[in-house]
Image (tube, rainbow, N blue to C red; front, side, top):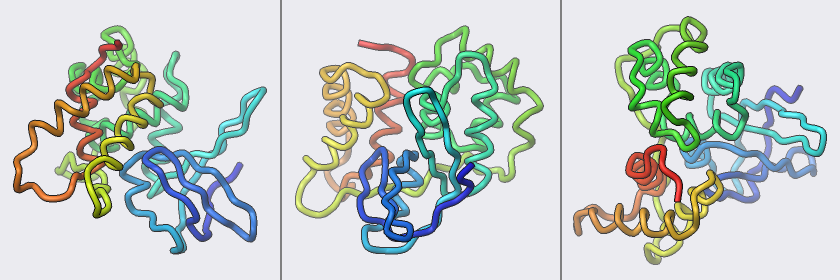
Length: 209
């Protein structure tokens, strides 16, 4: 079990990062909110969990231990693997997920890619009492990732890539991102990558295309 990694960030995308720990580069999958806090060339610490399969060993990293615990607990639900658990934390913060489960807010849970009506009900049933009480009154959102200067295309492409990685068809992902960006006010400034991803996920809901 790899419980944490501390090292120098050598690469970051919207879905993963590479952390150089003692000369070994660890590929770590994480949410946009966690990745937004990483900077190439700087040292960082991530709370991690290792998911072992017959043909792979995948490291998932989190900004704090609470997020990691929710990720691991979510996988106790039948039909929920690491991919859906990570998508849950990309759409909902740990406290927002706790509130959704406690209040049986199926609509909030169905915003997660891969979670339909029956899956949402199963999440409420099987996670009830397992996640604990919310730690704050603010549903909150992960620290936003702001697009680098020099144009919107890199940010748009990152969001499209993340949606495709979560299982959406490329055309559906592209159209949704374009629609979300078209709704932005002209004076909003640089594109907030994480916020754009969350808006796209809300727009898509549980649909696939």
